[in-house]
Structure formats: C-alpha cells, structure tokens
Length: 340
Image (cartoon, rainbow, N blue to C red; front, side, top):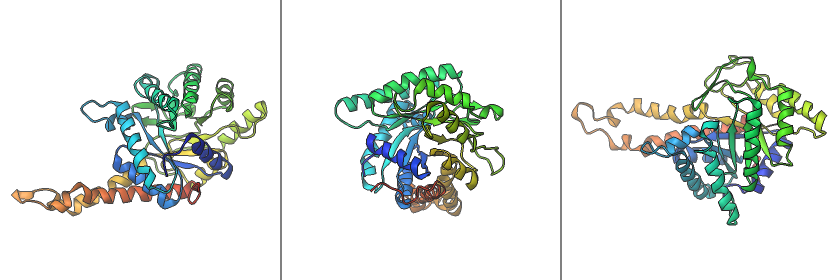
C-alpha cells in the first residue's frame, strides 16, 4: 500500500482511539531499519508509524554535510516508493524537534508538504512533532499555535509535548523528578490555545512519569492513570468526551499493565527507539563474534567475503528488528487491525 494519505492517517488514529489500541512509532535511521519496521508491521498485519528524529535525520544526511532536511526528505521519498510493496498503511512522522532546530528541520519540511498539497499531491510526511517541553508553557503553546496553523495548510497533524519527558533524547535532557507529570491545568491551557480539533488535529505527548532511555521494569514510576484525569478534566469544561489523542514517550521497560492502562485512557501512538536499536544490533554482534576470523583478515589471511558482506549480517539485523516491531504491535493491541 502507498504511504497513508491524510484521510487514511486520520482514520487510522480514529480507529485506534475507538478500539483502545495504539500504533508503534518506530524510529529509523537508514533504509535498512525502515525495511525492518515495514516488515514488522506487515508480519503483524498492523498499520503503523515510522519516524525520524533530528539526530536520525542528521545521520541520514550523511556525515559530510549532516543536513537534517535532505536526510529526512531522502528517506521519506524512499519510503513512498518501497512502502507500496508492503500490505499495510504507514504514516511518516518526525520525532522530537526543540525550538533551536525548528528552522532547520520542521518548518522546512512543513513547507515542502505545503508545496506538494498545493500541487494536488499528498504531503511528504503525515505528522511532525514540536517538542517545546524545555520552554515555559506559554511560549510552548504560542509556537504550537503557529505550527498547527501551518500544518493544517499541509494537511498534516502536529504532535506537541507540553511537559518534560525525563532522560535524554537527541541532546534534549530533562531531570527525572516530580515535574514529569502533566497537570489538568496544563491540559486545560493546551485545549484553550490549540482547541480540540476545530483549529487542526494534534497529538498530545503528556507526561506521566515517562523517561527516555533504558530502564528495567519498576525503575521508573509511571502513572498512566493520570491520563484519565486529563481527559475527564478537560471534558468537564469543554463537553467533549476523551478530547485528547495521547502519545506515550519513553516506553522502554514499561510493564504490560502500564501499557494497558495507557491504552484505555486514550494513547494512540507509542514511540519505540531504544528497544528496536538493540534488536537491530544484537544479531550483528552475534554474527561478528561467531565469525571473527571471517569478517577480519586475521594474521594476514584473506577473511571470508561471505561473512563480511554487509548483506549477510544486514539480513539478520532486519529480521531481529522486525520481530521486535511485531512484539510491540502485540503489546499495543494493533496486531491484525490493518485497514483493508
């Protein structure tokens, strides 16, 4: 199937909300990790989201120029071609973008999609994320209003993060403390500034103790029940049931119960990066250790071309990451839910 149209993406999110499941949003940094994500979704018979962070885009831009926009555009264009061979709908998204990188990443990408839409085409990406969690909420929402208006012109959805997620993500760092919990007041101010759909659709990354990085279950105090308080608090004031489409950030190490509670309370998208990075790299490490004298020309020998050929270990890496994506689909209840 082709990359999701704006209409299909909206339908995907609506079905997730109504069915109380969520789409894994898989960070990719290469054509190979893109194929791994697409394969995982196809094998799970789940639609899904593929996303590129600022660091991922810089890497894709090549180490000579490290241009984020060209890197993101190149992979998105590649995705538009190869996704047609997979029997699922895929939305393209850009992950965390702080204020100092908006002009070099999200704003140019929105402009590209606006040009495409004006020419009668679908947007290049289906959604972009503005991470204003390092700013004061007033400034965060002011910028979000401007970006949302531009996103509407491009027929795309904006994701906003209104309060911090702990840990580190592409150079943005937040302490792990009591500030990692969004309040009903924060949610009400967001609804007042961005509306509840009438000004354009947006996804909301609210904080309920989320932390980026690698943590064992129990090491991070998640309170996904807080999302119900946010939904009900704003619903009581605006008269719209379950007004928010939530995003779950920093989900590595989350328990099944925590994920289930988040789904029941309106999470429609959950980001995965740390776990899929490991799932991709682990088979490569195994291959290298098992074939040490083949991948290296030890003691003047010639090595074994079949073992150092990138295709030999690359296929294993793709398989490992794809398996982790199918597991994520099962955890988030999206398995078998693809649009026909």
